[in-house]
Image (cartoon, rainbow, N blue to C red; front, side, top):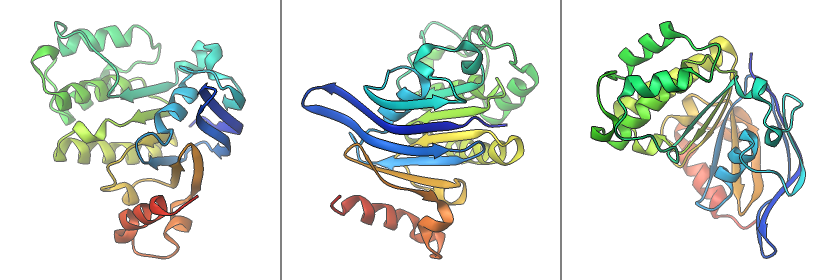
Length: 240
């Protein structure tokens, strides 16, 4: 089952003249697959950081399963997978060594699932990370993160460095996990390909505010999914 994310009047300010998020109120329900979209600097990564507890809100409340993430409830964190291009991995480690390190922190880590995903994403445990491309390193991260059998998957901008095959496998896998295990997924991205075929909800951020947050069907308004990217672009170009 997935985890709920409840947000009430959330704001985040990094200095007096720099408000990153403003008056955000919404609920991401258990089992939602939410695409978080917006221009660079719209607040996507900050929102994910707040969900993960990397930052503390300066205004309002954000809770994951009724817990405030910045208080570092490890029991809840055990259920959360995090994928980000910001994660640095020592280049002298092999893929297998990174997977072993990751396993140490999660009691529900599954070697059976790990083996399946190693094959799916064509990851060789013996390959050294320092010799891999950025996309290949993200494949290793995906295997590690999803092998913990998460209830919440938080993804920040990793799809851009995956190749066409890797991105297709990743998006298909997220959709399958969402439908089969009812895990909650929050995916921030600027790559709109295939989103309309996979996500359940669309969240558009503009200058730190929620411009749109609604189910995919409502967002499309009966239009064909082929117009998804154009509608996102049109909304982001509108004035608030």
